[in-house]
Amino acid sequence: MKVSKEEVLHVAKLGQLDLDQEEVEMFQDKLSQILEWQEKLDELDLEGLEPTAHALERRNVTREDQVHNSLTNDKALENAPETEGNYFKVPRIIE
Image 1 (cartoon, rainbow, N blue to C red):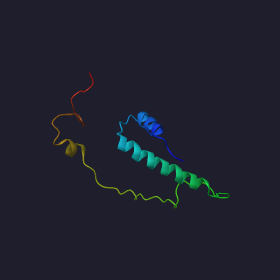
Image 2: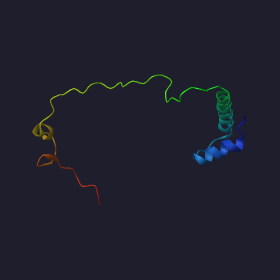
Image 3: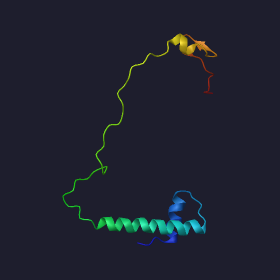
Image 4: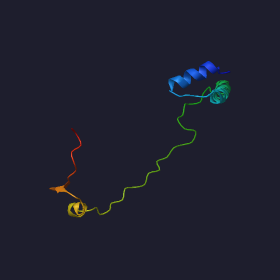
């Protein structure tokens, strides 16, 4: 499927992109290729295949939580320019 220059310009306008003539031609070719690949995918027989979100099995790659000693309030506030009780005091930014 060939994408027209008008279609590229329409999509660029929707994305608020200012494309020069060279970019319009480049995107015209690239978008046409993408649609041709999609047409090839549409020809595949997918009967009996379950939909998947990923081609490979996903696994949890997070690590186990490890308990560490944290700073005491006094240590955390030690270098603060201003404190109020057990809190950092910062300038008010809401007018």
